[in-house]
Image (cartoon, rainbow over all chains, first blue to last red; front, top):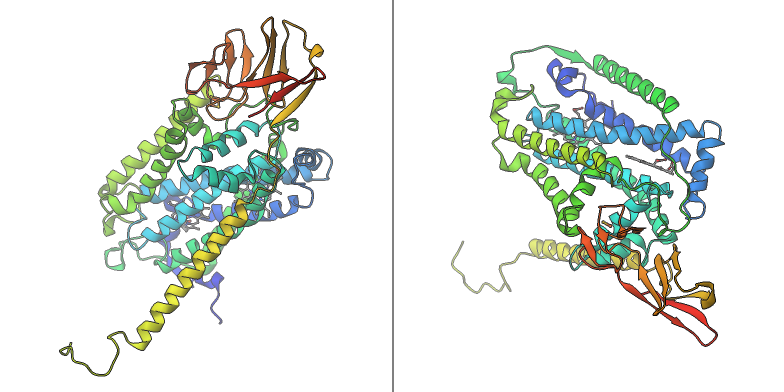
Amino acid sequence: MRPNFYLHLHPPTIPAAQARWRYTLGAGGTAVFLAFVLLVTGALEMFFYIPTPGEAALSVQMLTYTVPFGGLLRNLHFWAAQWLLVVSAVHLVRVVFTGAYAPPRRFNYLLGLALFVLVILFDFTGYILRWDQGIQWALVVGTNLVKSIPLLGEAFYQILVGGAQIGAATLIRFYAWHVFGLTLLGAGVLFWHIFRVRRDGGIAIPPPALRTQRERIFHFELVRREIAAMVWVGSALLLVSIFVPAPIAPAITEITAAASETHAPWFFLWVQQMLQWGDPFLWGVLAPLVVLLALALIPYALPQPAPDELGRWFPKSNRMAQVLLAALVGLVILLTLLAIGSKV
Amino acid sequence: MPAMRWTGEMSQITRRSFLKVSTQALLAASGMLGLGALLRYLGYQASPPPITQLDLGPASAYPPGSRTLLPDVPALLVHTEVGFSAISLVCTHLGCTVEPTPQGFACPCHGSEFDPGGLPRRGPAEKPLPSLQVEQDAEGRLILHVV
Ligand code: HEM
Ligand code: HEM
Ligand code: FES
């Protein structure tokens, strides 16, 4: 048969140890599924969404309240987007806590991290598309943070905003990034990432000589598990989307007028908390970049997991990486809780 | 490597590696040019430059003792016995609009507070809220200069 991408990902048999739920949590596969849901629901939303300051919030209201199944469609897109962020974070945590980033998978770890950043950018640009009072300050603060970068900030700001201040040019740029630019980049990196999983010898387990378990599963069983996961996740997503609506707020009348929502979107609350401490560039740009850099260096700067300890949780040999990641995750959660608790 | 002797060749670079290096150099150069063009393209300012002054209408509409919120500037226009003055309500930290409070102004985004004159009382903002210039033209209309 002609080789194709599907068969690349689904060889006739694989070691059973590579496809245990308890090991992978199915998080990577779930993320692929959610990305696909986002592509389809997002493409359908484009038939109603109007990316101009005057119409954007109204078109989202129309989509939500009058278009048949429009509200459901929007909720599906919204919840799939939030879940994708959570699921990729869970996947990242599992990769580090199982030491699966060890060579030869170091490069694929970086590709994964790039996907993680792309998902955050997707979530932020999508959130801005609502163009209602809920997003107003996040847009102002986010773009002004870009401006705070020494030397390059002003140029980056103009490229991002499309003018000296936020306006119609800004919305259309965020829209272009959200539905096209990021989609193109994301699709490319996503294919590369899952192509590399098989290229690197499938999901990390000990090398053949050190394996204790010899069992293998067939292609059919792998696909059965994938479909089962899609059915479960898909049903849960549908259920939540039927009962829990995505947030919506009154349209923005004037970008400078007081807005109802003063909290950043939930995934940036930890940054908002740090911004209270002073210098915007230091706390709003450098600090998050340092967190990202620390994540990127895990496979390169810390002790490597031992080959015979692969394929299970918490190998002793990569304790340092586990401690570092736990500390970072704990810090982000703590800052988020502080931000939720504070009155601003 | 044999001793260097004039063999009639111009240099040690083979034709193949010369072609390879020049192809790479050409690719790199056109890549940089393309990137430069893309950045200039994206850097174009599609929206018109923001207005620098605003006509607030007849000065008589703002009696002495009045404090008027101008939400779309945003600014607060104050008329005292000394005359007109205006203070910008754009937080000097990261640009949210501050709200007037009994003690001055407070920012909803990261908690900065300013005194009634616009001086920062509590961080993270470090710079004062700028005062904006107000003047009356010949017909008695108020002109606000938005910097
Ligand atoms: C990883 C992929 C994606 C993520 C994380 C994502 C995230 C989001 C989020 C959070 C919103 C705001 C939802 C709301 O509050 O209503 C949104 C809106 C939107 N997205 Fe996406 N999106 C993704 C992919 C796409 C794609 C591929 C398209 C188009 C082909 C698209 C088109 C749209 C449109 C038109 C809206 C505006 C309608 C609305 O706000 O409900 N999205 N997206
Ligand atoms: C949208 C985001 C992502 C998608 C769709 C995705 C997809 C996948 C899939 C389908 C696998 C196969 C194994 C599994 O399901 O666990 C995988 C493995 C892997 N991913 Fe991701 N991933 C994403 C994000 C990340 C992130 C954030 C990282 C880490 C920084 C990462 C690093 C890895 C590594 C190192 C492997 C190989 C694991 C092993 O061999 O055990 N990925 N990814
Ligand atoms: S924008 Fe006012 S405190 Fe940050």
